[in-house]
Length: 169
Image 1 (cartoon, rainbow, N blue to C red):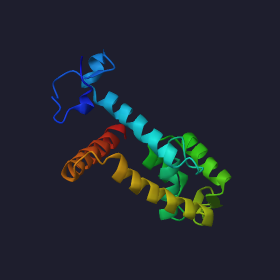
Image 2 (cartoon, rainbow, N blue to C red):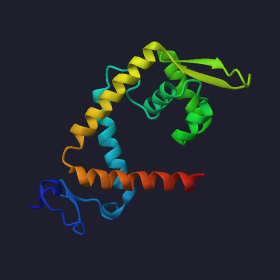
Image 3 (tube, rainbow, N blue to C red):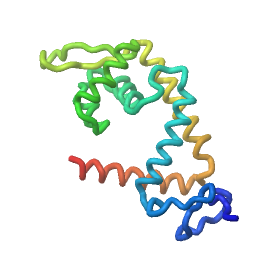
Image 4 (cartoon, helix red, strand yellow):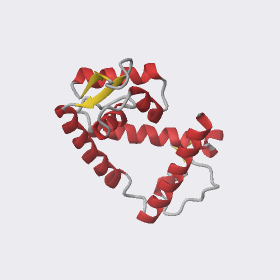
């Protein structure tokens, strides 16, 4: 009987991973499979932790909320750039935040054609709670990764993210 690889203290990186008696074929060596699997687990956990907040579920609302909180008057196009989403998709995210009462839109003082986004009092409170939840999740959800390994993993993730942005633009 094959053991679950998570039960092993030292993982043989070259050994195929078998889960529930199944080998995942070529995905075993695919960055994308691990990234999607981790994203699914992290997102599910974060959604449970934030179930009582209107920013739970879906991609981009948390980032957009935090950006508006940090940068009063930020433009939707700037948020779209950070999210790596097109303007219509970003517009739907912003619409949801406005509808929830977390963000308000104003006409940009310098360019009447552009929108400026501002956090509401309610939105600021939500952003503060989100920050606390994310910090707690980082500590609790990833507690199996040693601090030095976390720093190295974060360094690699940041490098991958920044290089993906370069490739995408």
